Image 1 (cartoon, helix red, strand yellow):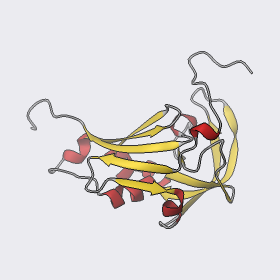
Image 2 (cartoon, rainbow, N blue to C red):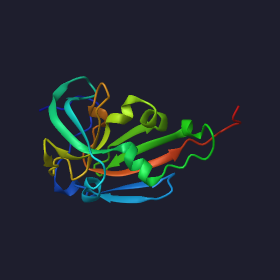
Image 3 (cartoon, one colour):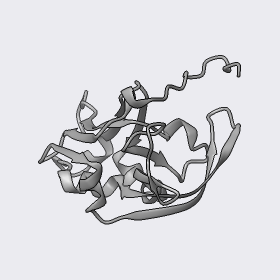
Image 4 (spheres, rainbow, N blue to C red):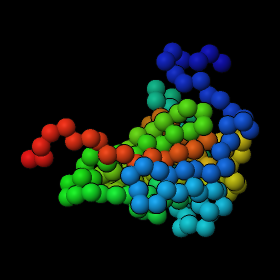
Length: 169
């Protein structure tokens, strides 16, 4: 199949599988969570998730994903909000072993419907993820186009604060 111009080549295989996700950055506690540790946390299920790539092409439907809300992972790590209003400058990046990235604002995750379905995935259709997705993956299922922030082989979650360049009025 010919790849569309300006699209990311998909890679699959055991060499990309991640066995833990690291949570670092502007947090009280850096974490290294395995799939087993994620299974021990409160689980969320999302159903009938349409897989729609960035171009709008439909790639099917996943009957059920199971995992942990990204907000629950961030709460466990303890995001540091240094002062009133600082949450508006905090953003979260997710990175994979195959070089893909996703980006969220703090407010998007904790103050909108997007955060309710931003899921660190450990199961698909009742089965642990296979080497085509890694032990740990991610999806932002509330997005209109789920593909750009659907990540196989999730490796890192990092919390950052946009540097203040001037006075806070």
